Structures are given as C-alpha cells and as structure tokens.
Image (cartoon, rainbow, N blue to C red):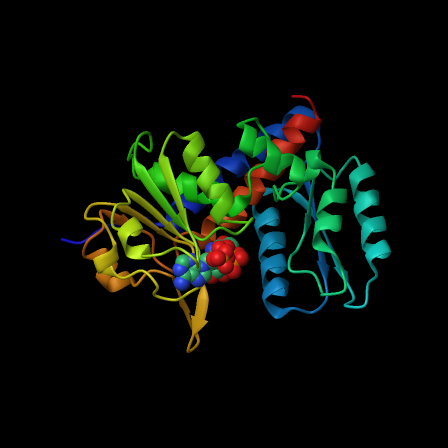
Length: 284
Ligand code: NDP
C-alpha cells in the first residue's frame, strides 16, 4: 500500500492555469496587467535562481514584472529609497524583497517600509498581525501553499490534531496560525521540544519545516496521517526533505515528495497574491 503522493507540481500547474485565465480577464476588463517588482541585493546563487524563476513564472501567466538586481554594497538608504519609489508606482501592485539580505542591511526595517497593501510575501508586521487576528491580508506564500496541499487531500482540517515542527516567521509560525484558523488543534514543536516523537506520533496532520534532513522517520508518523515536508537541504548534491520519505510513506495516508511537493507551490502562491493585490488596489 503506502501513502498517496500529494503532487505539488500538478496542483501548482493547475492553479497557474487558473491564474493565467484570471489575468487575461483582468486585462480585458481594465486594460492593465497586475505588476510585481522583485528586488535582489547581492550575488547569492540560490536567491538568483529563485528570482529568475519568479520572473519566468510571471511571464507565463501574463503578470508584468520588474527585477531590480542591486550590487552587494547597496546601502540601507538606497534600498529603502527604491522600496519607497515602488510603493508609489501605480503599475506595481506587489513588491518582493528577496531574502536573505546581505548582513549590513536590516531586513526588518526594509520589510516594514514596504506598503502592507503591496506586501505580497506577507512578511510585513501588519499582515502578520492580520493573520493572527484572522483578518484578510497577505498570507506568506509557503504556508499558503501548504494549506492548499492539505486541502487537496479532502481531509477535513477541523478538529484534527496538527503538529508543526519548526517555528520560523516564514513557515512554522504562520502555518500554525493558518491551521488554527482552520480549527485544527495545533502543537508547535522546535529544537527545544522534549520528546519530539511523542508529539509527531499523535499528528493527524504533520508539517515539518526544520531544514534538518530526514529528521522525521516512519516510526514518528501516525498511521493514515497527512505529512507535509517543507525541508529542502542539499545532501551530496540531492535535494533532501526533513522527512525520511521511504519509511514515512509506508505509514502515512498522504505525503509530499521533495522535490515536487511544497516547493512548486510557493511561487504559485506569490502569483496568486500579486493578482489579489491588483484586484484590491483597482477596487474591483
Ligand atoms: P529556520 O532555520 O528559520 O527554522 C527552522 C526551525 O526548525 C526552527 O524553529 C528550529 O527550532 C526548528 N528545528 C531545528 N532543528 C530541530 C530539531 N532537531 N527538532 C525540532 N525542531 C527543530 O528554517 P525555515 O523555516 O526558514 O525553513 C525550514 C526548511 O524549509 C528549510 O529546509 C528551508 O530550505 C525550507 N523552505 C522551503 C521552502 C519552499 O518553498 N519549499 C520555503 C521556505 C523554507 P528553534 O526555533 O528552536 O531554533
């Protein structure tokens, strides 16, 4: 038997088709395309790939995009000046500053200066606060993609025991709040959690975002559960998840592969947030 695979690639591609259609309808209605500005500072190779993929994904669905590649030595003020300009530009609906920034730049200050209405990454404190309050705002892309993948299984989240391993601001914390807003009973585990296994074994829904390859093995998984593996670490050149796939697959009911699970959803949710930003700014 073994778990059913949650095919993030296929789900993502179906959603991108819907977005493409929606963008076309918006163009017909308004004569405009939603616009995304992506800002990259420095030479980080992984960030360069992410930014290129975002640019390509925008093109594919008809979203207008601008990419700003700034040199490593860009000052905090220069970066803030660009963000302020983008905040004012009508044709830009979403702004994304690719993280991590070089050490001499203060991420929190930069993120706080992005207009919350254009914060399609959902990292601004206003959007984080809205998420906490259950108000409508921009939801960070990876957590939003995770919830979409869980829902694709048709497992009802309400009343389920959900365990999230990892408490980062970009994955663990927001996905925990989203699961809580969906009426799951949520436990958040982290590196100081005593007896991790006792928690994960009870999880009807298990989300793992630690960056520790193969941390979760089959014996730590509840039979029939939904297992979402967020981790992406290169081990001997191979992209490796936080869940030991072969053993967990024998126990779980549904499981995401790495690669091809959560990864493809993240950019798709960015496209979705950019369209949402345009619709809201154009007051449609
Ligand atoms: P962080 O390093 O910011 O956070 C990791 C979290 O895992 C921390 O809360 C840490 O606990 C916890 N942790 C570490 N070791 C253990 C352990 N042994 N037991 C329990 N908890 C542990 O990582 P991110 O949240 O940014 O990313 C996590 C993973 O997800 C990475 O592999 C990253 O590459 C991947 N990722 C993938 C994305 C995608 O699109 N596919 C997008 C974003 C991330 P503590 O707080 O106590 O230190």
